[in-house]
Length: 83
Image (cartoon, rainbow, N blue to C red; front, side, top):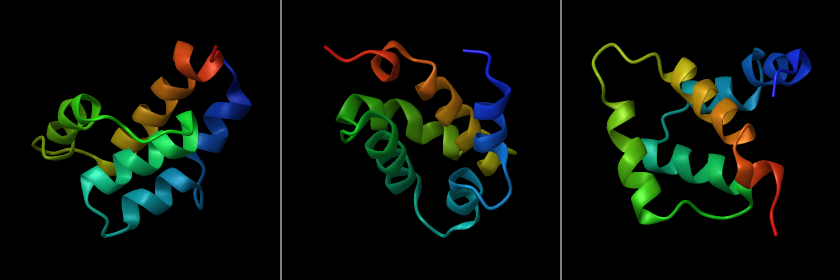
């Protein structure tokens, strides 16, 4: 998906990504919120385990990471179509 309006919403100041990045919430809580918001389901254990190390990577930009996660989730087949 190459929609500028979606990208602008994801990266906007005052948006959900910015608020999550600025919060003191832990990484698992953020991952769970993204999954509930985008896929309407909680992240499973494997998904959480795969994503948590990204939050503790050296020099991670928390906001950029959250924006990238949201963008990839919105572009996933699960978001686009559920049977």
